[in-house]
Image (tube, rainbow, N blue to C red; front, side, top):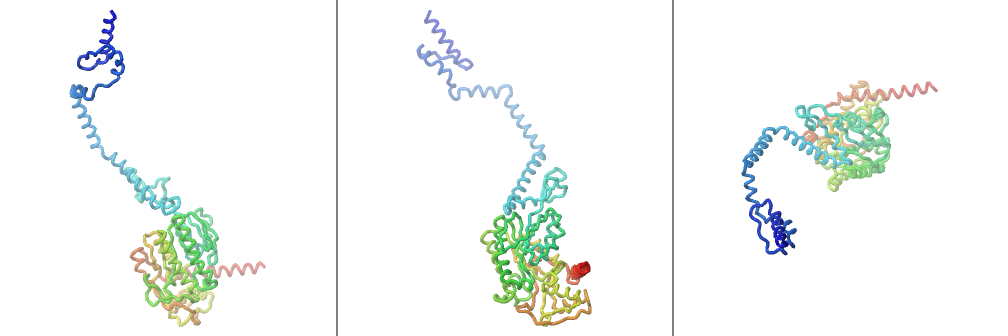
Length: 467
């Protein structure tokens, strides 16, 4: 009885082990082997390759392979017939990725990537894909945000007009000025603008600001002012420029230096091109300004080459317009103020020395194109129209007082005999040239001077009457 029950148990376990597989159960060698290895035998998988034939029969049976192939064909057909949705989605994603990459690339120049915020996104009418600068309405959350721009000397004559244009464009502007020659009145009309800020500060001392662009205009530009304190003038040109370049390097801002035609000195080449090295007296009374600006250009290019800083250099020729200092010693402001006050027009020397005069709005346009362009410079920014001092006096007489008389005085030291810019490079590379002639721009300046001169006199008379 015991043997039969053992046999029955062994047979049962064999049946359980091989249940569900083809082939008869194999007899075990002995009962002890069966008893010892029954559990381990049941846990082992069948040898590799034993189930290939049943799997193949399963796939081929009942046309399963045919239905699988048909399903794959239908899925492929669906994707082929509907490419627009997938391509539009992928193209929009790819486009936004490209825009983001460009924004990061430009944002690397500034702290916080503020430059990238200038990218204006507009919706494509058909599919709603966002494109920079495309036609269509800009979504509220993606409207263009202006740059943060610092203008040193921004309360001065040229700087204040530049501030006007930058704010009108939508930028946030920080004016840094010590008000030595600048005037608060030049920027007072922006006092309520949340995008405008003014800091009374001397650029000879370092300053830390988070900005995207730096227009460096700070320096006395008229002989009366820069000769008043020549050591301070050259410190402003050298130490001030060094501080602003250091700021630009620290925050990754683009830097524009406003140099001057005085770097050509008393030129031996006429007209002056940017490749001309100049003829400057390094120890003269004007050297604090002339050599100071030449050193500022040197520093700017050294930062560009050595620190990979984005820089621009403009060489500005004689400029006139509203907000000029009335008594700054420059020829246009001198003639206009003297004619309005019924004083003689003072001509130094024989009056045959020449200058070219550009209106301030033309200069500002050139500075902005230079800053936004991709060329370092230097670029001559001036009006190539050339006038002798006697011809300029005649234009002032015709504009203000035909009876104004001319008074000759001895010429000043190191006064250049000729000055006329060659602006071919600015025309070709910046697409810039002056548009306002002297006869058109001078009346605008005269009206501003008249208001300030006679307005000040009326205020003074009113105060005297009150006393």
